[in-house]
Length: 597
Image 1 (cartoon, rainbow, N blue to C red):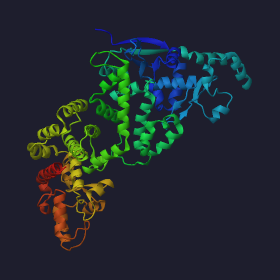
Image 2 (cartoon, helix red, strand yellow):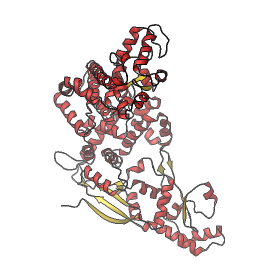
Image 3 (cartoon, rainbow, N blue to C red):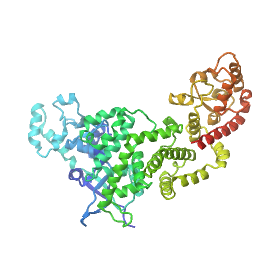
């Protein structure tokens, strides 16, 4: 069996020369440096003490066939070790790093040659002649140690010049320290590379396929990979923090002049958080919508120049891939279409991100939106198909098990059979009468408040413009948008005192969305008691729970909230019967809601 990797040892000086010459690509240099400055200090101290600092993992990109028939040797990509190398470049070479606010700044590490202590430079240290405030000066090409030691001793009378010389020589020679390199073969697939990474890395932090794709994007200077990667990073950051826009304008003027930045300028005024994509989400949607493939490992292969038909690596494939992916990213960021997609999701009753239990399902819905738009379907048809597919996928957990396989299969089937035929066949298969009548009520036997079944039930209530539990004027939508209470119809304290467990009293069939004041007023009263009071209230009696003041409004409210008949007579002894009856009512409401989408 051929070896999957080679191990060797390089000096830090050789490794840094690789970086400076471009032989090895470090995509993280283009992204925020996430290490605390004290970690940089600790790394330098470990090197000075001649302690090992771990292995670096490098994955060699495949060689690419150029248009003239020659071959371009692929770059080495640093898979693990970006932060260590960036820290060394910052501390020893004086390179700037990018902060979390995307500002470029220097990290200055100070050294006390009398005590052999490293510190992060600060104003006090810079004024103290005992400290060398920035060790980068010791690694400058024109640095001469003898004059430097003389000047240091002159500033610090009584200092032993020989000891200072020895300390600085020891510091200067840390670039000769060895560091272990694991170089992975270019023929390895991403699953194998990921597995090797997890086994070697002591933290065991898995790399996603999107991480590999983003690395491939960032290191390609010929096709403007740096700005493409920034476009993805910045969009996702702005979606969460709109005020970040001004920081990009101030700190990254080069990117601010690009078309990418113009495309996302609308986000500076946007506070809707229904869909705040990560870079994983954005890459996946842009790729699948453009390339009709669901596996991100295919994107990595294409970014490397892989021709799936000839099995060769070709520059033309790289060029085409970057062009198409750039289009996909711009489409994703388009204000008109992004907002239109959000409108479609909201029109299905999903008015708050708390109702969306699967981000991957939301991703595919956006992929489907772009697919149908590119096919030229009328807007009304696009809206209907996206709504129905989104709700069906949430109810069935379609993209929660093996999402990439499901996405890849669905996109190919839609391309082959058309959305109308494929969606109809899939929905009939997945949401049969047995599903609505038996499977769904059974699956609702759960205490997970964020379950897709309860979320879909709430979306159905939003869509129907239902009022909150025992509310006359406040809608479920308003309660969800303003963070209402989830109330137990059979109060939790009541059931706990009856000896029931958390899993029993927290059943979703025991939940309703209610105004907090109504929840408080009910307290731990039994349904037979407080519902009798509600009936009296609706007939002109004392107002205790909300503002309902006539019988029809009360029974309409109970029906909208799927409260079983006879609730006004139910005690703790009836709790099991109540749950069974309410699950069926909730399932029926979701069915009616879905069929009307």
